[in-house]
Amino acid sequence: MSAVTGQGHVFWEDLAVGDALRGPGVTVTDSHLVQWAGLTGDWVSLHLDENHAREAGFAGRIAHGPLSMSLSLGLLTQTGIFGNVQAWLGLDEVRATAPVLIGDTVHPEAEVAAARSTSKPDRGIWTLAYRTVNQRGETVMTFSSSFMVRRRPEGGER
Image (cartoon, rainbow, N blue to C red):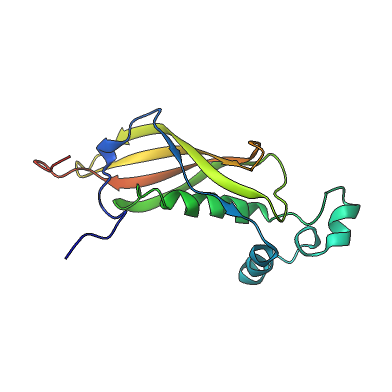
């Protein structure tokens, strides 16, 4: 039986501070906003009422901030680096720096900001500094997120 792609091939030692990652993009649609509102209960008019959003000074309805963040977290998993993650430890320093509109295409970029050992020899911690970037190259969100990652077993191949 062959291994599942993207699972278990990247260990803590395989990424170092300064390493850069880029995930694929997704074009944000009306469906994303409506489904996110239904899933979370966040029915704020900026996200669902075109007239209200325009009256508030936006070019149209804007994506929920947590939706934009979740897209970045999810899209970066498609790089295959999270197969040995044992726990998501949380996120910090979340900043929405520009609105995400329906029709915008966003992708995540992340840099390893910290990589440290833990008291347990079989795991380490990565802290990734994320940027969510739109199709114009503008940063629309920044945040950092930390993960507990399995270390390479002794004698394990690279």
